[in-house]
Amino acid sequence: MLPLTKIIATIGPSCQTEEKIRSLIQKGVNIFRFNLKHNTLKWHKEKIHLVRKVSKRLKKPLGIMVDLEGGELRIGKFENGNNIELEKGETITFSKNSIKDNYKVIPVPKIKELFNLTPNQKIFIDDGKFELVVTKLEKDNIYAKVITSGILGERKTINLPNLSFEPKIDLKQSLPVLKFCVALKVDYIALSFVRNKNEILEYKKFFQNYENRPWIISKIETKEAIKNLDKILESSDGIIIARGDLGVEIPLEKVPLYQKMIIEKCLVKGKPVIVATHLLESMVENARPTRAEVSDVANALYDLSDGLLLSAETAHGKYDELSVSTLRKITNFVEKQRPEKPSLPFEIKTQVEAICFGAFHLYKSEFCQKQNVRAFVVLSQTGKTIHSLARLRSYLPIFVLTENKSLVNKSTIIFGAFPFYLNFKGLYRKKGAKEIQKILSFLKKNTFLKKGDKIILIYGEDWGTTPGRTSVMKIQEIV
Image (tube, rainbow, N blue to C red; front, side, top):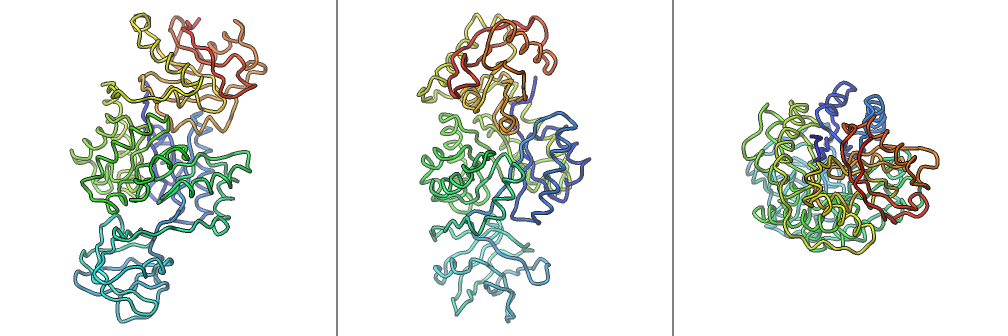
């Protein structure tokens, strides 16, 4: 059985070599995430080229996800480049720059946002690992008392649970990064700290002028994002449930409820949804995960998420490869259970959705169950058919054949999708027996399908001329 759940691994010091990247792919990684909040654009460019090189050699499509800073608050870089130790009870200074002060200084480039705070309000840093309380605001500085001690690193996020602010999206300021994404033809842009649909639309407006338009994946990690979830989901190409910051912005006990709610809404809309943060956090230092982590991962799968995102586990953990293989072992077990989806209010608004809904129920029929249908095969140009079919969770692989090169890598984020670039001249404008045979021969050569196996083939009779016109579904025997 092919693994259907998608695994996203964050590239970092632990897994930046060609050998490591190849090993992670072989252990189950489908997408590599590049967090632009760390390291240089030059470094990221080199590693993206390296991933593409390995992908080509292994003949396996891989997605490239670039994580942008977005509208979050984040501490800056320390003057000497070293981490600083925060001791419980001591007073520290938040300042725009690394100034000379009687106290330890934490630089904050967007310091003006903190001046809406008042004494006794709390500041959380690094997913809530550090808690501080504001004592006074003076000139350009904010003073705070340390409640939680520890070693603080650079570029960590700041959360202000009792303070709401609207970030100003300045694409001109982000132009070098955006042009970097266009030039490297990245597949997904992950937007951090999304608060409303307007932020997403700003980025989409920018990318619409380019041939290679990345899918915009919104990270849900603020109270405002929960409040505006439906509109954010409508405007996004996918969702990441970023539980670290979300668990600081809202009460911890509410995170599982919202996780389930978000996954369900994404299923209904046919948008890929990724669960992220602290999946196997203990494996940064340990060779085995906690039982609680395994249960957490499994429950995300039983709730029918499309994929799982590893952060520190692969970026700078001691057991990056083992983390991936552990995650894949869990996903394989859960997929064999074929968790039933709840009775979701699927919307059937388009011809594509109607055909996919019909194809799913054809597969579930008593006749097809006896026929041992092995896979769905979809001819797609835009990806709409793949989304519409994947959301129904048949637990069959969906082999995607497309002449759209950018769709090949993008489809790697969709549950159960296995994309192939197929460029048979004239194939997409005719669907006679000769053309169907070409498709079947390709499948026999490139998948586990063999003579006598049954598939459900889905395509549009005028596919290749008018996108979104899927019109045919049929049981087909591999000959």
